Length: 171
Image (cartoon, rainbow, N blue to C red; front, side, top):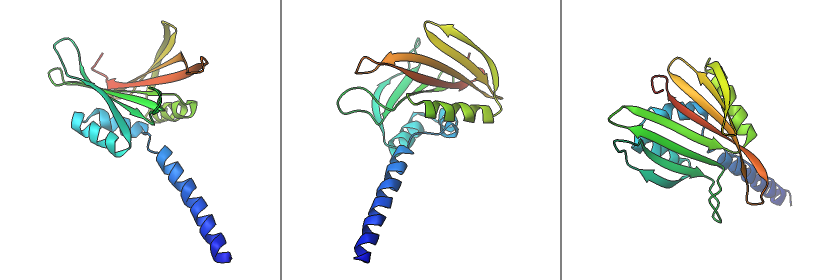
């Protein structure tokens, strides 16, 4: 009987650990900073390894940056997801940007804390078209954070945050 109880306890612990591991597959701000410097293939490989789902891509033109978009923990019933990420690029202009949307205040606070730990300066904030925009700038990277409201599938207003990472020269 003791052996059976140990097995049940081990299975319970394994379930908790695996659930935490799956949730932990979302990205850290350090990973986002590093990914911004990669090419499309590098970004795609990392996101595929972390169970992100590819959702769209557009090639670069003379007027528009190229981009690839992914979703994390995307619903099978609709287009909702825990996070959305877009990687923007221009080979010709040498531009690389990362934009990630999160729907969790916990993830927002984690990302903002990391940006502050990088030593970035708070340049200022504005309200534009019903969204709050904040700009933080480090030695080489700028972080544009926007906070908006959207309605979920139950017609309840919910907050989302978008973090855009770009080179300081890319303004």
